[in-house]
Length: 217
Image (cartoon, rainbow, N blue to C red):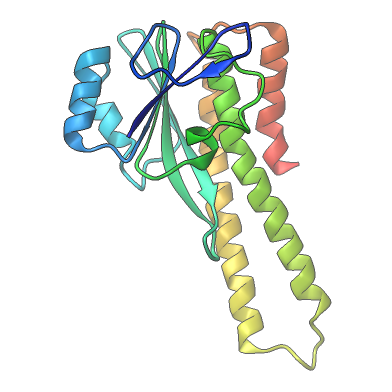
């Protein structure tokens, strides 16, 4: 499914039926044929788009033909342990693309994506990255509460196998989140201060640096 979003300085968010310069293109659960059409129409790298559908894809940064491909992951919890899935953000000159093999409610209905206008592509990338990082913050907060709750009910006399299983699930979830955040930090740092950093103002740069510290704080 392909959805177009457009918002300029007026602040009104619209969903055009077709592409227009300055829009954000959000793609969920695309077929290989849809990826081919997306690549052909917008001059995107088909292989990199396909990588976004690989469930084991790790956070990384690629640059191809003047476009920046930012591989992230989103954390979600249907049941413990937490799961993460890849989301690709593409920064092009006149548009931004997000691609995911699974549903991403935070992006398909972007009420949580604040302070963004689609015609400012670098700022939009930061807003989308912030939204995805918040899924990790929520995950860490939930797991912290789970640990406290589990500990409060434990005594030396009443520890059961189910208690051990619960702690193992919590540990697996924490390891899953942390294993994604470490390469994400390296990737995002390259995006900000690498050889060819994205063009953002100092306020946005400070905000981006805060994002890198937030999940672990």
